[in-house]
Length: 295
Ligand SMILES: Cc1cc2nc3c(=O)[nH]c(=O)nc-3n(C[C@H](O)[C@H](O)[C@H](O)COP(=O)(O)OP(=O)(O)OC[C@H]3O[C@@H](n4cnc5c(N)ncnc54)[C@H](O)[C@@H]3O)c2cc1C
Image 1: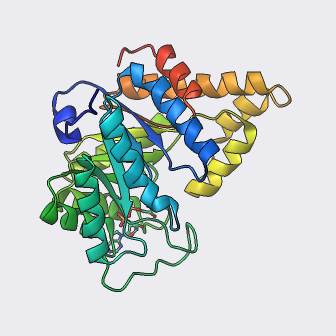
Image 2 (image 1 turned 60 degrees about the vertical axis):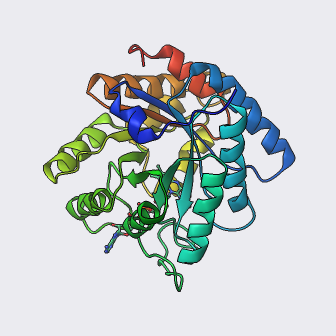
């Protein structure tokens, strides 16, 4: 069966809740096998779209085009490719967009990317490239017939001067042609709804889909804090740490925490949910089937 050929812009315009999964390009064949097993296991849930991240550098970058293309060709799913400004000239970006279009991919998540030294280090622009996600959105819209999404940050981007300037950046991405946004992971529904209020007040009208990362073990809590530069809220750490020494119970509580957050978000009017799957399908399937709201 051919892949979904719709644009995310049109899929979101139906007003139905959107339900999506994010994968990353694996480094080796064993990882590739796990990825495709997960994709096949999640396919029957008929998600609105699935996305594949773009590597910080190195060889996995070509894999984003290859995997999204294969999803378009060999599954019923609608793929979205992430793309960043890191280390690319505008000519290279245009060439990647051409490869995506040839592979049947019609949706791109336009990101600046983290500085090559890692999150929190100084951003170094590439000569002949683009500097911010808004510039990348503008470039994509000027050369490709693609639906373009961007990143949003419920607690503000780690380098933003204030929550207000962070929302001004989001507004700038919308003005550049972005049609939807997906958020960084977060744990308090109030952070998401606070950002929505600020965004709507600043004239950001595009749908903003909350990003959900299920906690399935105690180490992942630490990893998440490192990635986002934010602490996981103490009450959530306590809820999960209570079960230390019992991995199955830790996992069950992590799934319960994420399911409660998802229900609160949907009940409060979120346009859908975007799951960071880490290329595994089980936790996402459990949360999906446990939701009080039918997506
Ligand atoms: C849903 C999601 C998916 C992601 N996927 C990937 C991925 O696949 N690969 C990857 O490498 N990274 C990914 N990231 C991480 C992302 O690249 C980083 O968070 C990056 O630091 C910010 O990207 P951005 O697109 O928000 O950048 P921008 O919107 O460009 O913002 C970057 C920083 O610059 C500031 N800024 C923006 N415009 C201006 C301006 N005109 N003047 C001054 N300051 C400005 C912003 O406040 C912010 O601090 C993802 C993040 C999210 C939330």
